[in-house]
Amino acid sequence: MRKRLVIILGVVAVLSVAGWFIYQQFTTTPQRILTLQGNIDIRQVNVGFRVTGRVKEMKLEEGDVVHAGDLIATLDDVPYQDQVRLAEAQVAQAQANYTKMMNGYRPEEIEQAKAQLAQAKANYQNALRYFERQDALQQSHVISKSDYDNALASRDSLKGQVDLAQANLNLELAGNRFEDIDSAKAQLENSRANLATARQNVDDCKLFAPVDGVIITRAVEPGTIVSTSSIIYSVCQNEPIWVRTYVDERDLGRIYPGMKALVYNDTDPNHPYVGQIGFISPVAEFTPKNVETRELRTDLVYRLRVIIEKPDRYLRQGMPVTLRMVDEHHEPEQPRR
Image (cartoon, rainbow, N blue to C red):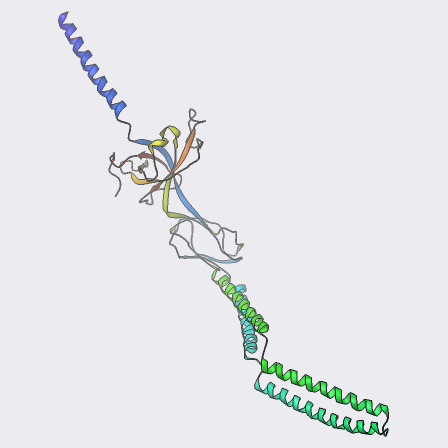
C-alpha cells in the first residue's frame, strides 16, 4: 500500500511538471505561424483597337504565348490611307498659302502698281491743265457753266484715281498684315495636326500585345466590324501573380505589409512559393461566400493580397492555396528556388 502511494505521488508530480511546462509555453510564447486559405489571382488585360474598322487578320489562337510588342491582329487600313493622302494635300495647300503670305507681293506686282500710279498721275495732270483753261474761259464768260463743271469733275475724279493707285502701291510695298500671316500659319499647323492624326490612325490598325502572357480569349474573327470598345483578345499576364485571401479581426494585428508568406498548392505541397503581403484592405467586409463557413457567415474580415515573388506556369487563376504567414526567424519548410 505504501509503495503504491509513492508511485501515485510520483506520477502526479510528473504530470504537474509537464502541465506547468505546457502552460508556460502557451502563455509566454505566442503562436508565430498564421495559416490562411486563399485563391490565386492573375491580372487579365482586354486588348482592342483604338480605331473602328473591319478586322483583316487574327494571328493568335487561345492558349498561345504572347510577348509584349508582338503583332497580334490587323484592321483593313485602306480608308485610313485615303485620309492620309487627303491630309497631305491639305498640308501642301496650307504651306503654299503661308509661304505666299510670308513672301508678300512679287516684284512684278509692285512694278505694275507703280506703272498704274504713273498713269493715273499723267491723266490727272492732263485733267488739271484742262480745268485751268476752262476756268480762265469761264471767268471771261466764254464757256457755259456745264462745260466748267465737267472739267472740274474730271479733275477731281482723276485725282481720286491717283490717290487709289498710291494706296495700292503702299499696300504692296508694306506686304501682308501680321494678322493674315498668323491666320495662314494657324491653318498650316491645323492641317499638320490632321495629317499626324491620320497617320496615327493607320498605325492603330495594327494591334500589338501590351504585356507578356497567354491568350485566354479570341473574341472576334476576320471580317468582323469592330469599334473602339470591342474586345479583340483577352490576355492573362505572366506577372504579377498574387493570392487573394482574408484575415479576421482577431489575427489582424499579427500581419503587416511586407510580411513573408509561404504559399502551398495541392500539386506540390512540399515546395511552397515565396510571397509577401503587398496590400491589406483598410475596410472590413463580410466573409466572402467562397471562403465562409456557416459559423463565420456574419464575421467581418479584411482582404489581403499576397504577391508571389517567382511565379511559374503551374499557378492558375482561381487555384485554391494555403498560406503560412511567418516572421523572419521561422521558416517551416524549404521554399522553392
